[in-house]
Length: 309
Image 1 (cartoon, rainbow, N blue to C red):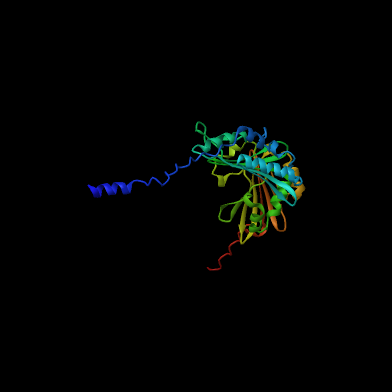
Image 2 (image 1 turned 90 degrees about the vertical axis):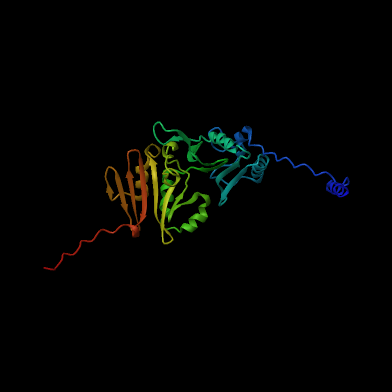
C-alpha cells in the first residue's frame, strides 16, 4: 500500500510546474475577397485598377506605382509581378492559391471572372471546365490562364498581330532550343521528345471550348508547335489559325514570303534556300509549317533496272 501510494504521488505533476499550454489554433488564411479580385481583374478580364499606370509593351512604370502594386499584393496574400524586358513591360502576372479544405471552390469562382470556358466531349456528354485557355481581352491584350485545383495563374501580355506572329515563327527556325527556353521561361514547355510548345500572345481561336476536348499536349490553340533535331529548331508550326480571326492572312503571307511557288485552293508552298513554308487551308482554319530544307524528305530514287537475264 505504501509503495502504491508513492508511485501515485510520483506520477502526479508537481504544483510548481506550469500546466501545458493549449495547442494554438491554426486559422486558415482568408481568401481573396471579391473587392480585391475586382481590383486585380478588370470587368473585361484584363488587368484591373490596381495596375493603373502600367502599359503592356510600354516603359517600366515609376517606383511609386510598383510599390503600390507590391503593397496591395502583400496585403491580400497574392503574387503580382511586372515582367520587365529591356526596360519595357512584357507581361503582368497574377498568382493566387486558395487555402483550406475547399480552396478549389475559391479558384473556380475566381476563374469565372476570367471567362473560364466549358466544354463537352460529345453531344449529350457532361460538361467540364477548361483548365488552360487563352483569350483576347480589352484593347489588344491577351490573357493566358491556368487553373490547378486551388491555384489560379494569369499572364497578361500585349497581343501580337498576324504579321508579328508569322515573323516570330519564322525567326525561330535554326535557333538553339536551350537559348529559347532560357529566354521564354514558362512560355516554353516540353510536349514529347524533341517537341515543344511556345506560348505566344495571339488568339488562335475565337471559342477556346471548341479546342479543349483534346489532351493538353495535343491542343492546337495554345501556341507554336516546335520540333528540334541535333540541338537546333528544324520545324515551327502554327497549328491552327481560325479563318474568322485572320481575314488578312493571305496578304500577310505574301508580304512575308512573296508569291508562293505552289498555290491551289487548299495549299500554298514557298520554297526558300534554307526552308520550305506550307500553308494548308481546312474548312475553318489554316495550319502553317516552316521546315528547314535539310529535314525535307528526299524524293525516292528510281530503282536501277536489273541486268540479269
